[in-house]
Each structure stands twice: as structure tokens, then as C-alpha cells.
Amino acid sequence: MARNEVRPVIKIRSTAGTGYTYVTRKNRRNTPDRLTLRKFDPTIRQHVLFREER
Image (cartoon, rainbow, N blue to C red; front, side, top):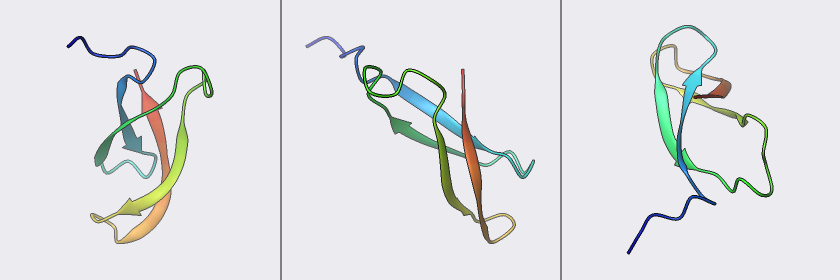
């Protein structure tokens, strides 16, 4: 089966500058802009904003 491009795999990188990334999927129809999520960064042991990188 082919991969579904409506839900592509994206990387979200920490805005704290640690370089930590998460890999997730997003629905391109519902959220066409860049995704931002507040997640845990284990390098600095805090919750910070993670922004989608292209």
C-alpha cells in the first residue's frame, strides 16, 4: 500500500535550542500551517513549544 499524503510524517523540533525532536503525523486538510505543540524536552527537563520543521 502507498503512503497517505493527507497524513504526512513530520518532525517537530524544540524551540529551546536543544535540538531535541519528536516524530508525528498531522492531517494536512485540518492543519495546513506549521504545527506547534507544547511537549516535554528531556534535555532541559521542561515543557516547551515544539514547532514543525520542513
